[in-house]
Length: 526
Image (cartoon, rainbow, N blue to C red; front, side, top):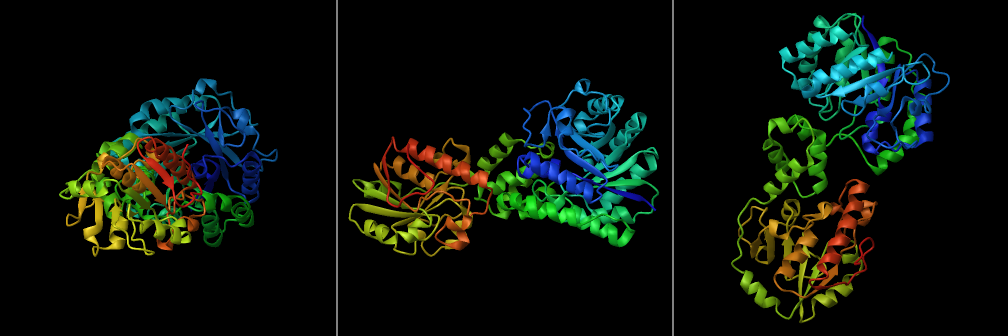
């Protein structure tokens, strides 16, 4: 019968959901409750020399800082921190004296294996228990993995891990890797498993390990409430209950539920984590989960679009997140397609001496509809709605740059459609070049409302009236005229969009007179 131990990584892996800003009191309380729950190993956060210390953040620059959240009564628990290879010089570590962390987990990619193992040896020489975390373990060939195990045996760490960094590991993959480790790793070294839940397999894979016939000591990583980047991790509270019921373990559930109720629920409401189609796609394509988050935050792509972008990625670029690379792929994908501007001159002529009323789908487009209708009916006004059909009055045109919105509206009004070239439809009034309407502000580079404004400025319009340009509230139910258009995304993304839109609108106001017909709640012209 194997011996199963739980390592809770809430304060470290969970920190990807809140920038590690748990707050000092909350971090201490989480550690205290994990001790009460009888969790075997408690990970307190990251150790890095590339940051400035903030006591409310679970990233630390010294082991002395880590000591501040470790209780005096350690209850025979192990306390550890993680170092990403390259973030800390082992020479700056003091000797382990039992007053702070007991162990250090070293995470590294395959390309850094040799140097990372040297770091592990140096840390062990300082008296710390070393946990070797071979990230994206499935990226190793069998020969490479066996070579790694052989090198690990030479330095004899406390534990060696199978790491499912992208949540893509199937049951058969885990079993294959485990038996390679069990048959070749020195018997005194514990075997660990760290998983993510992109394919909802973290729980079943952890169960598989506990059911294997082995005398090995196992460590299974988890986090309370599954808190972790993207799809999150194995849930501590769920897995300890499974161990209690099936293996006679005696973990205490109530302290874990207290952590969720009193601390983590608030973080979840502000920045949710869990299974999603984008996270599934990143796992399916063996790609870093940040790629999924990046594409999902755009809110311009269907699942099919995201899948095509993942399929176009170079295999050697998938393991580590490269923001410039994915931005280039995204723009290249969106710039595909041909323009169809047969009516451009006709439209430019029609716009001469006219003001353009641009109606976005914000809540004010309904709340202040009388004002909008009155303006739209003026003889010197051309009206255009953005990414939706305005139900309060008929507009002269509909501007579309988002495939999702295009599908929602349907094709019955194609003679009114002004669309961007990333959309595949050709039988429309006008199809203009997508890339020509982009701006330089990342958060709103291809915001449909801003693209529409630039389109009309480029056609020589000097007076633009904005309606329904409210900006974005953290309460997503307040943002749109129609509930089904709600934009569910991170608060930080919404804030960046508000700031970005205000900046670009101010910039465009130097090229045309721009005025708000409906009062914006979160935007302003400087």
